[in-house]
Length: 424
Image (cartoon, rainbow, N blue to C red):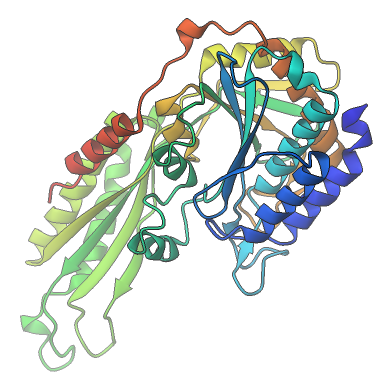
C-alpha cells in the first residue's frame, strides 16, 4: 500500500532531479529536494552533513548490533549532447542516479510511515553520497587545493570523514544498461577498477619547413606509443576485461613547428588489482620505449581511480531468497562482470557491499538517449522488493562473515598501487 500510494510523488521527485542534473560536489538543488521531502515526512528527522553536499540519516535503535547503509548517489554525468543536459554545465542524468535517490526515498517513506523500522533488529542508515562519477577533475582539484576534499570520489571522501565508521554493510542499487523485455534485477555483477596514466612526451621544437632535421617530434613519439598499445592488446587476458583508451590531453602543436611536447592520458581498467599493476607496467614500457626509439623523453604520472568491486556473495543470497518469493519481478541475472567502475569498489574494501541492479530503461547508459521507460517498476515494484530484502536480512546476518578494514588500510593499498605503477 505504501509504495503504491506514494508512487506518483516519488516519480515526480525523480523527474525533477532528472531534469535538473548537477555534477559531483555541486548537487545543491538535488540535496535540497531530498531534504524537503524527508523533512515533510519526518519533521523531527536528524540529518548529518558531510563533504559539501552529502548527508545521512538513520532509522532504528542506537543500540542495534548491526548498522546497514542504504546508499544513493547524487551526481550526474558530463554529457552536453544529451537531450536533457543542463545547457550551462553539460550535466545530464544518463547514469540513472536520479532513480537511486527516488528509490531510497520510497524505501525511507515506507519504513518510517509504517513504523516497520521499529521491528528491525538492525539500524538502517540512508546515505546520500556526492560525486560518484569520476569527472570534472579540475573543479575537484580546486576543492582539494582549498582543503575542502581529499578524494575525487564521494565514497572515499566519506570514508575519510568517518561517515562509514559505524556502518557494517553497504547496499547500493544501480540501473542496468540496456533494454529488457522482462522486469529484471541483477546480483553479483562485479565491476572493474581503474587508474589513470598520463604520459608527457618531450622532444625538440624546430621550424617544420626550414629545419625538421634537427627536431625530435613529440607527436610522433605519442603516435608510436599508440601503435605499441594497439599491438600489445593481443597479450592482454580476456578474462580481465581490460580497457585502455589513450587520448591527447595537451599539446603545443602548430603546422609550422615540430611539436616538442604532447600529453597522452588513458584510464586503465581491469578486474583485479594485480593485473592492473601488470598492465600498467606494459604501458609504461611502451611509453618509455617509444621515447627512446625516437630520441625523446617521457614523464609519467599515475593517478588512482577506483578499486575493483567484487560483490559480497553471502549478502547477495538474501536478495536471491527475496526474489524466489517475489511474484512481480520476472528475471534475475547473476554473476556477470563488466568493465564499468564505481567508487563502491573502494567502500567494499572497507566493509562488505552489494549493488542490486534493476531494469526499466532504454538507450545506452551514459549515452545521449538514456531514459527510464518503466517508472512503475523502478519507483513502486522495485522499492517494494527491497523491503522484502530488508526483511530477509533481519535477524539472519551471520556476523562472522562481516569484515572491517580501516580508512588507513584503504589508503595504504591505494598508495602502494600508485607507487608500484609509477616507475618511469
